[in-house]
Length: 331
Image: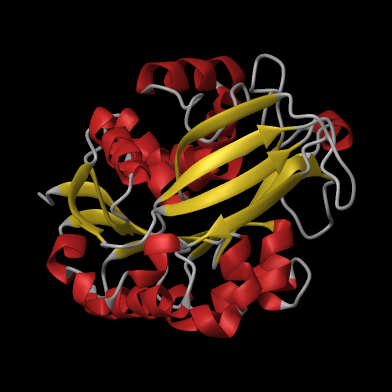
């Protein structure tokens, strides 16, 4: 049996999220609320999967500042193995400054800090190979991107690998990620980031990842989009008319759209981290052997939990809470 269910490789940040009435490009706004917590795309996913009871570890870099202690302590609280997180002397831990408004708009500014100094020498291929699933996401910087390519090459061809596309990775373009995507079992991306990554519109943008060798592409649509002719869904005719589509799955032999349901069960406080939470529910189902469409509905429910609190981690569910809410909405 593998030592871990999931090992993540990616950025380790401190997120400082400011809730404002409106995100502006020129002007001033009063701050309604502030949330400070550990973050990073694959780090959030590893944290949440550990909270759901899976055995998780992480590879990444922090600085030698107080923020590093917050990052490490957050992992330890839910049982994530931190033995392969390296400390970079003389630099700060990565950080993200984010502004989010009532309409769901966000502006995010990242300082890579120690993340940009994660080098090939910091990579332990044997540690990565000790997991059932390896999760990749953005670091920020050219050196860590090369590390990700090296990590993929070091894994056996049968390894289960997952890539979460964020704005930074999307901005770099698909050519920089070809080697990683070609080995991916699953790639997650929202529709806007996928279009930026590939320079194409859906469905061609998602098909481009399949053409490279990715086995399954999971496209999310935030608050939802209208059902498109190229989508397939198990929704009834009435649901097709009324419900937006929150997720589209495609693989070599199937394509399915998941209608959005109000799974948050309360007011929407902050959408930051909802995409990470979707990946959490999806991967938890995937590792349990669930069909892909059920994995997507688990992701939809997990994202609903995240919407109820400020920040990426405060609202993440326990296993019992996720299963119970999923049963209420999807049976």
